[in-house]
Length: 579
Ligand code: GCB
Image: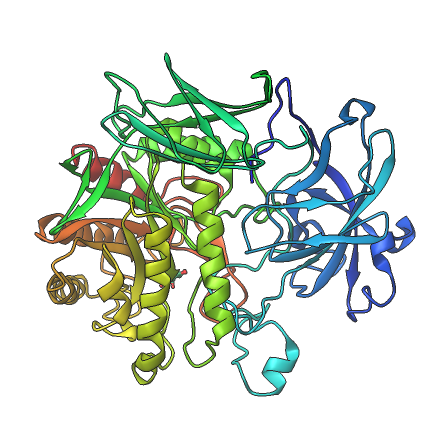
């Protein structure tokens, strides 16, 4: 799937704006033909991109979990005549079924990733009605298991601790959180591109297009030609390798030639040349050891929820520079492609995470593995050309429930999943974020290239005891270092309520958060197997309601509106000279 773009062969219309939404409280929309669209009287306005929750809190939908039908009308321009016309959703949270003029036209794939919809109703010169049934519930057997359905609770299959009911510590915002596009592409055009670019200037590219099509690739002053479906290689002399210090990007032009050798389609991409490798206890970027200093983040903000927020993205990348951070994990799901554009441009190293949180091996079925594999495939297909993406994270904190009794299931599961990811992309290290409860003998460690651990010593364990917390961290680092691989602290931190202070170690104060982070960072830097750490979290973010959260998870070093807490200044100082 190619990202929508406009050039001599391709066109795109952004369908962002105010759509109408109708909440399907009794799950009756499918039977009631709501796909045909609804009378505005029964609907609310909703901004796309944007989450419905805070926009429509006063109407009673803040904590709504279920289906909602979003609709808009679009006029297909006559200039689209003779081309393939499709809808492209950059994502739908968490899933969508799409109807065009009342006819079911297709549905989403893995959550947080783009999907396209074809429909013979999308005809140049017509006005059509687009209706998307978006559902923010998750099934029980997906790679992130749902708990939102009342019947699961009633049947005693899940615990009902959070409102809305989720099994993760962030808010299950619903809606079309990223843009929706109407696209026009040449008939028989390029459908997908995979590329690899290494620090020696070699680029290998495979384009999917009708069999037998000739493909031309041009980059800098170099060109190469080959056939669709087959790798085409070229080499750029004197390449500037991509790195945080010099995030050199190159424009790549991919063209499909018709039988007469005339250009019939064109795709513009950007990539960078770099190598990444886990070797011994080190992570090497272009052959040099690199220390990862940065954050776990969330796509989260007031009012728009998880909706794409470009001003906030600009601000966040400014704050990453300001703290001298060099990396981010896309906890706990794939972020927007706009985020990755910034990362590529600004030299931020990204651990790109699949949406798999708190996988519960008691509930894992064959369907779970199949969906997890599909999510990995779709993520690698979307982001594989990105120089900023230096590793894939296949899961966050799986197996914290009853993991040790389910090794017989989790061991083969990870072997299969990591093997699959490695087949798809042998050029990037693989990891997952381990939670202490899953054990230091977590079977996913055997499969991973980087051993990542999330540790909240000093907060959930050994609260208000920084020295003890650091000793516990050291013991775990020593234990996992025995795998002989690079070790990474993917999460550590403490809640702090901005403006709360104390002269003695006191949870929720800015001083305690800053002191804990500084003490952890000293240990991370000193440990010979450790390649760095990510503070949890970059900014405060909304969670589902739970007695242990005061509206937000307050582990941000910035507030939700991006004001610095003390820890932000401390990190800025600690990280300024760490390379
Ligand atoms: C974790 C999770 C993260 C939570 C965090 C916390 O281990 O990975 O999603 O937000 O802890 O603050 O409890």
